[in-house]
Length: 238
Ligand code: ADP
Ligand code: MG
Image (tube, helix red, strand yellow):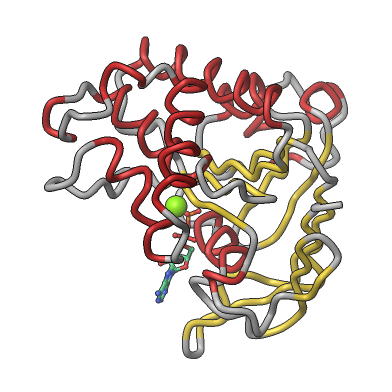
């Protein structure tokens, strides 16, 4: 099992507490969307799961194992960022294989995993191109390819579509969902876009000012919001 368990998690930066005792249980294989207004703590919570920040209270488990003291590279996760973070001087294939190379995976294995990911993401014809020669949607796919080749137990996405135009955003939502249906990797997806949350999530977690206001299936939140914030944010006529 490779669910993610977030128990009484708190994060302070100096004196300022930005995450206030969050509890979330993410089931193995679920597609969970963290949604909420800018500044509510979504990226921070994702970075805590990834180990890019340390919790200042509570605990996080991945696949049943507590990871509070585990370095990011030892956590079985892969993160896709808003700005993709592609290396401009590397080809698509090199970008996708780079992390594996750093971890000492041998060349043949890297080539086979890159080929496999390229097939899944429709990147076969682009493997020798450089990032500047790609469209926004293609760059987004390469960023996902870099995550897929690592065969992680958990995918973390931080507003991955916010740099794309509206039409491409809708298309990429569908591609990411298809990818999830195919690989069934536990996914935590951050967005500030309610529609993206409603259309993509198995479970939506609505955050506000560092707390969880409500978590549940999209229709449950829409039909039965437990507070005015969720009612207003998800947009049901409360
Ligand atoms: P979101 O992703 O929901 O927009 P963030 O998690 O980025 O929100 O930020 C939540 C709050 O934490 C904000 O008030 C932000 O200014 C603060 N914050 C985030 N990172 C840091 C940091 N490294 N140092 C100090 N404050 C931070
Ligand atoms: Mg953010």
